[in-house]
Image (cartoon, rainbow, N blue to C red; front, side):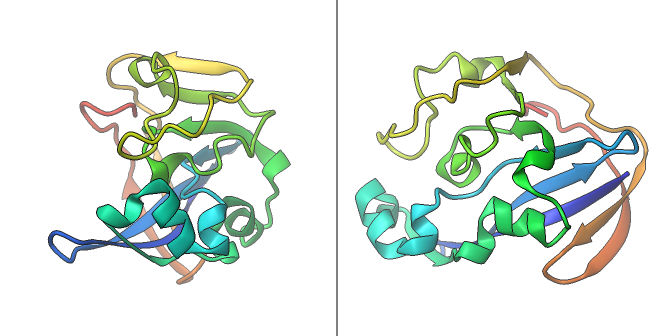
Length: 176
């Protein structure tokens, strides 16, 4: 099993200057499954981040420092030798803008999501904006904590080429 960190870009919060790496994960299991965790910002941010930020009013909260076509899920998966069709499960940790940008890009993969998030009429996205509808696909809704992995796995970052070993654990009070 391996877990790769996907680089979806960088964001700077106005209020405190904190820079946040927008990331997702690709988990390749020993059963030849590919699990995609989160999908970064919408594609329009890779085309023109300033215009997209103004349209969504995300510029009121911060600034997208980096989001290029290379930061989109398909490009990040390609660095691992994978395609969108290889994704067998899409995990959506929550429905903020930097996690649901590619929500519709994997129609064949079921989405694992918190039941509370899926109960929403539309994904939260950002502020009062709700431009994304739920995709027509299968949903696996979970309540409470869910253990995703219990074994050691290799974690790699395709951008940095770094590898390390970590014990994967569930996170209390989150969808996963």
